[in-house]
Length: 352
Image: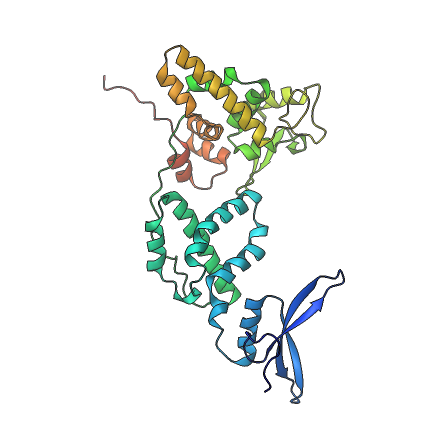
């Protein structure tokens, strides 16, 4: 076989062809220089992804997959290209942060060479134990996809590796903290706090609530994180619930968004996550400063620790029935509600 004039870094019988798209952009198409059933020369397309092309070449040529096609770097690249865009925007950002930590360590490592001990060493070397857990979980999914794509048949090295122990957030916003921040907030913040408390939903799901989700006197919620569907009743035993009363007030506003969101400013602008965050931080700062001026340092400290996301566990903690609390939060496991979200201590009687 005569020496290659192009693509001399490619395996034998693999050819790189330059092609031009209709828009004028040039791309590289990889081909296998093979033979048909009659022994005549035939070029077989291997695609435009070099690493995937090398794996297809190995199958056609009955040769081992080249080592450089089985490194973690190209696997991360394919994961970012094919899997990441299918995830929610917030999850994509989270995954990219994880990859900025994983890639410097694993990019040049052969996929089949990574052992559980290497994963454990990575876990122990990370100074942020909770972040390390998230990174290892993402790495495990990358390995699972590698097995699905046929890159490796090896066992997932993340399987069975112990995670760092995580302590759930245990802050509970007591009534004095709630009242202080609530009274310092503007009207739209108070409405958002009420909606979050009465529905027990995550901030993103609270902001997404709109008129189109009100049907048959129920507020329909599809949770963004789990896709769990809930129907929260606004009338019980013939009596309007506080949630129903809140929704009635919101629908009666003289100026409302054309898109139908329930939570909006006085000018009818739908509330965004940043608007809620800014208004909450202003109210929290004002309430903490007022408590400090009153020489109530303990209250000021507890106010400063209060976050909008703590409203969901506050709701779960103040529902008497654990089963009802778990259903409202959309949990299928009572243990999660009890362990993570029920943060108020149980009220008990003294000995005498």
